Length: 558
Image (tube, rainbow, N blue to C red; front, side):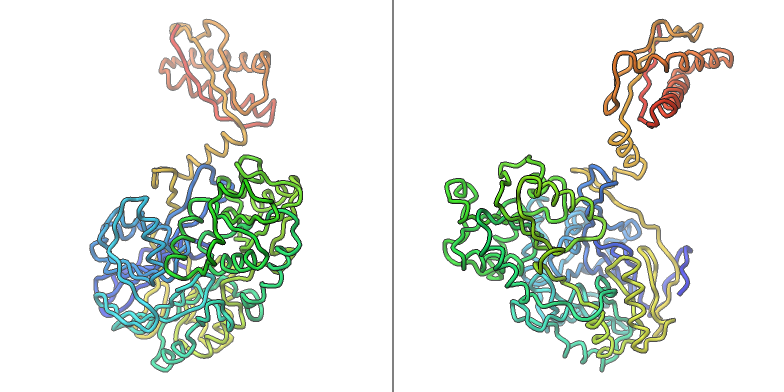
């Protein structure tokens, strides 16, 4: 379908509107809003983690500006599972309206509740499980079990007067899952018989042929790491990857090692998973990190965060030698997670840092220690043939994933005109059994920087990059306001810019020339003089050093 940048029309009575406020064209910050009969239903509200060109940013939120003045119309937020890219934005949404009902499975809501403690928010929650059905406003919701890389994941069927929608959430079709909980294909087929008018499908692995490997197939490679490592095993994983942590605990127990969790989010999430029974921990296996200092290295296993190269995470700090845990010769570091697109440089920087310290680094690229939590092309085709939807909307993925998923749907017989390929902000209306892109709402990145939400802009990020890459020069110029001449040579204070006492002497004639020109034009405004000085110093720095530093001019009247 053709893309459009026009504002959407007024929603026709009886129609259903779908707007992705995040998660399309990217891996993260998933949030989809359904509008029907004047009410809004939100499915997921996650975060996106920053890339290297976004310095100082903690996370990136979905942009719900479009619905901010309609928060009272939101009947519920449905969470499909407990990963950060699906629940991480909920605290910020609840800051704006704390009593929005949040619907999810037991583990998902427990992980969210633990996060909300830090935000001092007590949510209104509704716990559901597979097979359950409930109504919220004009939306009739049914929940189905799906298999993913975290327990208790759900797909959601949404029945409205406009038609039946099935949203897979993140899923795969592991036939031998660690927890024995398989994707409910019988439920998918039953809904297909009822008639699925719009199928929202996880696209992450749509360009990967075949079927995703079973989690159980990783056991030999993980066991090999524990069997052959002479010193400590340090495992890095997502803090919510309960299945993978279970495999690590089982291997550690089998080889007589103790385990300590490192990092606040890892300790918190594994505590929740253990308390609820999703993580099975043998008695005495997990110990406090302080005990590890007194144990023989070959009896130690550490489980930490930082598998995506996040600068402040435990593993990155270990790689840089900036952590209380010092990686040493003979240690093995196991990266037990996927490589999220955009994080490649950061991850390889961590791998190189760990290797330089003598560690053996085992990761997906050199051993079978991770499988994806998402359905590959063969599984997606299987689902299309079972469900036989009238319309398909690929979700959750970068542009290449969305298009690959669309092609799979078309190859199984869905009319190409009924497979809109949308981007964040695109409005998809389901009316009279057809799904079409009818407009677009404006979407921006919403940056969280410490306690500030939305205060960081693209312009301020550009300035941060310049500060980090090009440096900053402060110029203090004492000017005779009558003659617009320098009363004495200016002072230069520089950071991130190699210089000595004579470095900036050649820039002074350019400043003097600019002030002469200002005098001839009758310029007396201090701000204008500061702009002139900044421009001349920037031009000089580029001509001389091929650098574009931030220049902060300060003009003082003599």
